[in-house]
Length: 380
Image 1 (cartoon, rainbow, N blue to C red):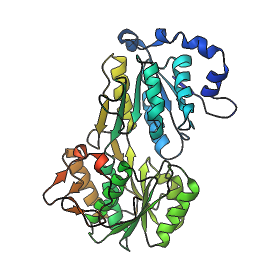
Image 2: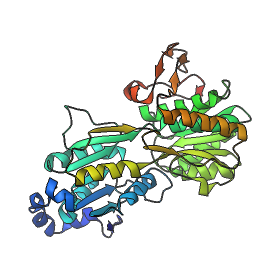
Image 3: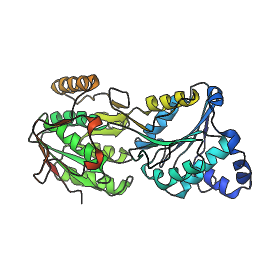
Image 4: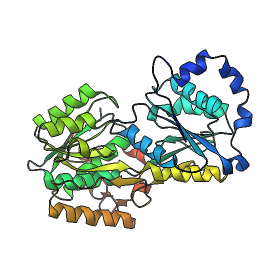
């Protein structure tokens, strides 16, 4: 069972709750709607909140596909709202889902929803569960009814890099990035390291747009990278749609991110690093319905089913396919390290020493404040 309410100036959850006297009345009933082990066995309402449209071919679509995976579960009702900005509006949306729909497990998915918005709601409703996509939750600092989940998608960007390494003719690949935060830097580094496992002379030009979603700047950055000689492009922005279509329109190969963008550029799409949120959300929901404790810091990669790869496109050579599949098999076996020394940053400093190796679950993202040697660009 699914309820979907599109955010709009005319009518939305947050506007309805704010303007309706019923909001306060329903709020007083909230304690009776809270999740208990007995109630969890019979029914559960789950709320999903997206910062953009559900069909953006990117971040929001990946989460919406995950939400779709739990809609068929017996006794589960899903409520969703899209296009909710990272402001107090998301608090109003969560309040609405709790008070109007009896949501007991909420997934505010966007990066900026966490602090202060999700934290404020978690304090107000200590018997409900809130989980956020990212790595911001800290034990001892944040409420126990909150937590975070994320995947080691750097593995996917490394595999993207392998496909790019075989496809590039000019030995220059490009990356359109939103902001120089640790997760984005890790993806840029992983992409180039994958390409350099094919040819160590390959370089990667990166352009930061400064925004998670800004179509004009994304198009400008993609064109600029191609004008500077990049013949394979990937990205880390909320919706890769503009990057994919712009690059393909210029005859440039593409590696996707977040979701499968191959329908947008079937001939130029090499592969893509995708999220597999359906597995993650299904596990959360099953535990909640069974009255089991939900994890506060949940992580996994390809092996654990948190991440997946788009099918290889027609432009991928047989040689590239063999290396791609061999590396994927190694990752699925566990223990594969994207970051193996020696590695220098692009300022010449040793960041991973000879003999050092860091599996994804051993990397402290907070320390990822550098771009590896061969990345042309700046975090400033």
